[in-house]
Amino acid sequence: MDEESHLIVFSFNYSHMKPLFFLWLITFGSLNTAFSQSQIYREVLVFAPEGFSEKLEKQVKILKSDSKGLQERDIKLSVYRITSKTLTRYKNLNLSKQNFTFILIGKDGGEKFRSTEVVSLVKLYSLIDAMPMRKYEMRKQ
Image 1 (cartoon, rainbow, N blue to C red):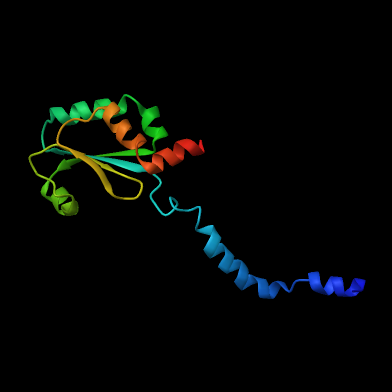
Image 2: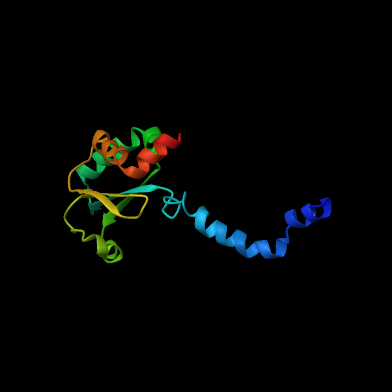
C-alpha cells in the first residue's frame, strides 16, 4: 500500500458519525446512570394533626439538631398540618387525620419507611445508610 491509501483508510466522514455517536451515547451513556433518573434528595414528610402536637415538636427538634447529617444524606424535611386539604393532596399516602405520621421517601420516589412515632436520628440514618443508593454515594465520596 502506498501512503495515499493509508490516508483514505484512516479518514472519517463525520457526517456519517453523528448517528453512530448518538447511538453510542444511548447505549453506553445509560450504563452508569442507574441513579441519575431519580430525585436529587430524600424526603422526610412529617404530618401532624392541627393544634399542638408533642410528637411534632420532638421530631422537628431531633431533625434540626443535626443539619450536617441531614445534608450529607440529601434529606429534605417537609412538615404539614393535617387538614382536609392536606388529606386530599396526599390521598395516595393514606394518612389519618388524628395521627402523627413520619414518612421517608427515597431518591427513587418510593416510600421507604413509615411511623406514627417519633423517629430518632440513629434509626433514620441506619435506614438510609443501608439503602443501595446511599451505599453507592458513600463509595463515590
